[in-house]
Length: 272
Image 1 (cartoon, rainbow, N blue to C red):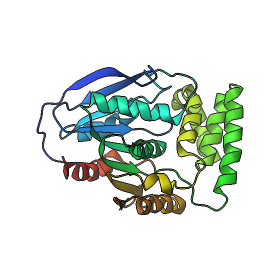
Image 2: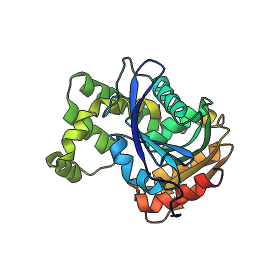
Image 3: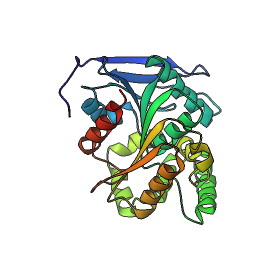
């Protein structure tokens, strides 16, 4: 990483979204070019803090609690458009435009925001969770119906278990997670799994939407991630007018911040 070029500072605030919902955010490294980080399922601003800290010496990094999580509000009914408006509000806080990094479902949300024409100067995404399998649509519909049913009946533990099983977490690992302190935090935001599911959509790579993105985009995957995940990442990069693909050797979906940070710094600094 490059040596610090500005004084490290932290600022917390709330951005008002288009529907009036207040979105809690933290800004670190106030003097650098702005970068907004969009987390995936279960993620809050706190979860993004280690990566933000590594980027903060060079950039003004904004991490935030997506609606329905942490310190952010939540206004019914949910829609992907409202989450895009949340990013628009954060872009205003950043000064009108910014680079954006999104991971997993947060990557899909960041891509959607860019496709709507928001002033995103450049975008980096890590493993957007699209489905490239032939039966993906049917499987996704069944998952959506089951998830919505569990959440409507307040069965949060089962909803979290369902989500984890669908993304490939082995049953014994899920059982261990249930006994860990993290489980309470995961069930607290279980209702937002429906939001993540809506962001990803029916499943397949949305090639027509991606073709509308004019910003340059780097799509990153982990070299040790499952083959379908890597196929999806390449498909996203190929669908983008200004897309490029990069693989981080040995990394999985839970990418190590110290491995990812230098890649993001080099990429975002190129147009800073």
